[in-house]
Length: 347
Image 1 (cartoon, rainbow, N blue to C red):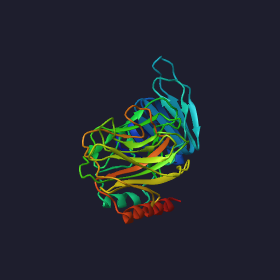
Image 2 (image 1 turned 120 degrees about the horizontal axis):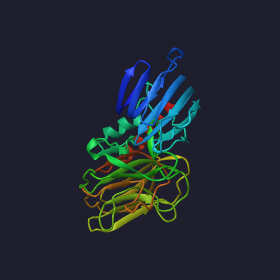
Image 3 (image 1 turned 90 degrees about the horizontal axis):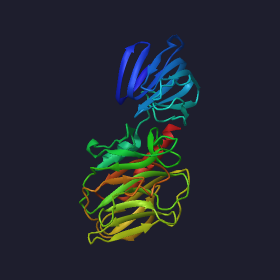
């Protein structure tokens, strides 16, 4: 049984061989299917009785073994050398790159792949969509692309040096954007963002902080004298929400407690023309008088980074929703409870 996740490009050559050019697949192979092979641009993955997943993207092939054993034969590298055969066992994963002979051990991605059609009910996403966000980023990352609902507000993933991928397990049974944390992730950019012209605004997001830091950006479209909003850590490492009002002035409110490390936190920032507020896990934690937010409809939105690529988040970001209206406190509490229900259903 092979499950292929769109978008993907592949050829089912026979019942024993599949060529995956790009995209993700998961395979569950019984004993009588031993020898089933997945060919990628970088390697051949030969099943020896197992459940495994393959992710092909931009010159790399990742193989994740959830049960059993596979044999991986890297193809000839750019310098003409042939890679050594690798045997990969339960709970192991590797990345094979087209310019290298040797593979790189990586973290097993238990939540990235669709391995069954019996998926849990998506309580949180359904609750968010019922409130009509102008853009919703569930952090589905494919081929360096950051997928949005609606698709016209999709963006790109920024990458650099690192060992771990720019995606990681999310708050639910899905992926999240990973920034720094020894990863290739350097944030995301939305070049064609949704227009924000009502003066009212709400941002909902889950954040996961790996280490204490100052200045790390969650999301922002502020650049110099332009842009309307930002959610980031201040110099002391405290979470701060900032908006630019109609007079062009920046107004901020800051939490008085630090975010816990290596724990998912549900964060809201909201401005309704009278107050700028921050909610954490369904509770109001900071507020300050604030005028309506200035309109912004063309400046790119940066996620996990600032425009200079310096103030990077250090951890993960997931389930980012943007609204051109203030959500009520009841809506915010209800969304948090929906998240708790979905998390509980996954245990």
